Length: 184
Image (tube, helix red, strand yellow):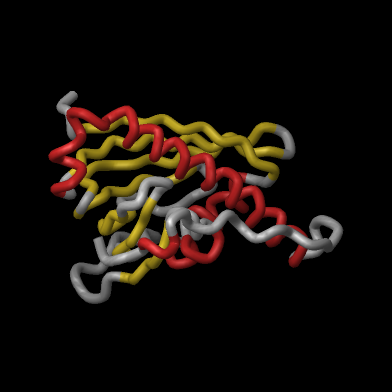
């Protein structure tokens, strides 16, 4: 694996069914609302070839982690979103593949995300040989915020549907260095 290549496996456990998890994670357009610490904006990609049956259109993403830089990349689903998971490709500042897998475990779902990417952003490519552990820690921070934000979103949806007792659900964690959200 080269200095600009990264392989991550993240495992989450949240209260909810695989169907509920798929409904949240499979809707890229809603990512900035429920996972704002990482997803700053999402823009659907118009035109181009029609995706396969049940596969969502690609989306342009503007993302960040804890560190004060942002990434722009296109998420392209390569499989339909199901209660078992889905796969995607990334192209732009990050290039590679990802796979979400959902497994029921009683009242919870175990979510596994395998992410294999290479950095293309010049800043990351130039510094990766030195700061790879820092960039990996940034990814782990982002994914921890994702688990926290997903759990909150599932609570919010369950309360709105009357599945659980209504009550206040705190907002998801905001982005760090919000004042530094320049185009970079």
